[in-house]
Length: 256
Image: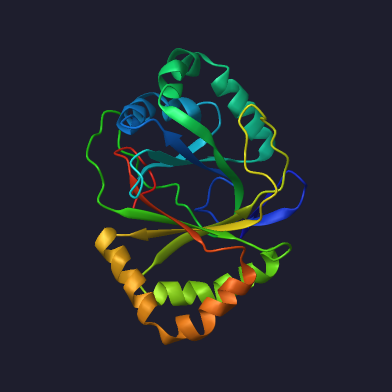
């Protein structure tokens, strides 16, 4: 297995299929009725142009439960590259040309988690539909955010892999990756990130919303989930997990 070096010099395992050792999970609150305007602009203008300066656009999504939310993921090979790439894009001609139109759709764009992979992989060999694609995928991407108690990361990672992941998988989830808080300082302060938090984020894929509802029902029927895992999970968290049900846009590379 190869390794990649983080901004503090420590080594993290990196499989051949995994890219983006640094990941931003971004959720925007939009003015009512403007989400499709932003998505059309994003898919047309902001995918290849970001990747040209050193980022990876992992996926972009509609929030199934909130018509005024847009969620997307982008990645970077390391923190220094992140700083340079963001400076190049947001100081460059494409953003300057389209920023007024993009910003006009947004109420808030500061709901951002800075993360790094803990397990699993986001595959870099899947094909992104070309510019102009308009067929919406049927798959569902479910992001679950676990707010961890202080200093619980190592224990929770073990608990997640040993107990939670098998239970969720047995109930029908396909968990492709888990990510945890990246504690490097935000090196592009013009774009704020959520600070002072300790999270684990899991990303699961489902064929459709029906499959997800069947997954939820299977967990509800699980005696072990109620008698053992639910209490063990609650003891490690600050509050209930946050669940985002996301449908990929036509050009999202990550899809159910």
